[in-house]
Each structure stands twice: as C-alpha cells, then as structure tokens.
Image (cartoon, rainbow, N blue to C red):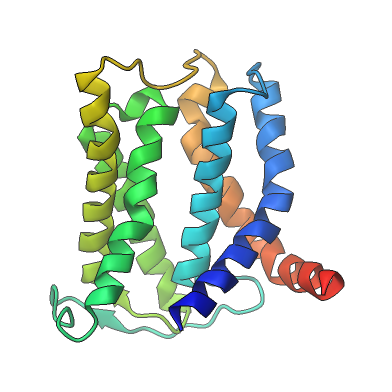
Length: 206
C-alpha cells in the first residue's frame, strides 16, 4: 500500500518539477545568481519537497474544491492505532527543517524555521477544510517535530565543523523573499495547473 502511494507521489513530483524547474531558474537568473551552484541544487530539492508535501496532504485544486469540515483537536488520540502515519508526518517535514538553513540566512535559528513550518502546516490544515481530509492538531505537532529534527541534523554538524551557512548567500531578492516566492509559486502550480498537467503528462507518456 505504502509503496504504491510513494510511487504516485513520486510521479506527481516529477511532473510538477518539469514545470517548476524553469520557473525557479528564471527567478534565480533575475536575481543575478549562478544557475549552476550548490544553492540551485538544494533549491530544486526544496521545491520538490514542497510539491511532495502538497501532493501528500491532498490540498484542494481548481478541479476539486468542496467544503467538507472535519476536525480533531485532541492531541495524539490515534497514535496507537496508526503510529506509522505519525512517523510519516514527522519525516515529511524533516527535509524542510534541514534545507531552510542551507538556503537562506534568515533560518539559522530554530525559531524562524519552526515559525515557517508552523505557517505552512496551519495553511495546509485550513485548506483541508475544502477537501475530504481532516484538520488535525496532530499534524501540527508531528510536522513541527520533523522540522525541528531536520534543523538539528544540519545545525549541530555545522556548529561542530564551523560550516558557513547558508550556501551561496547573496544580498538580493532571492535571499530576502525567495522562501515565500517559491511557496506561492508551488501553490499556484499545484492549484491551477497540476490537476490538468499531471493527467496530460502521464497519459501522453504511457
């Protein structure tokens, strides 16, 4: 079951990245960044992670957007019945906490990292009001836990070996507003384009 789900998510991410990669490179070019650099590679990985998160969480899109409110406000109420789901939620946000300090100077402390991930999670949970998914306090807890672990996995070695983070820092638009621009870019692509593009791409390929 999980293998099939991961394959579907991977296919969705692949089709998304075909459209998102040129858009990201345009933003980098306009900001005066080198296109061939560690920053670009990590940034494309970050964009792929965002696309995967949107795919996993089943956000509404232009084809399906219907009010269907379901909410759980009791923490960890179902952890004994589905511990794997809690673990997957932790793992889903781990790369976000890991990549943010590598990409932007603003996220060298744990508070900005958790603040960004809290905003992203709350946005997702509110958006799920318009899908068949349940708005769940557990998602916020596990997502922040994953982001915190990811942050520690990069910050602790960076402090021990005196790594200079982020990689490729520059005083430009991409450094100051990139994280929000890319978040909005992926959201627009997933909401407006992906429902049609993914079906067309795979139907054509297969």
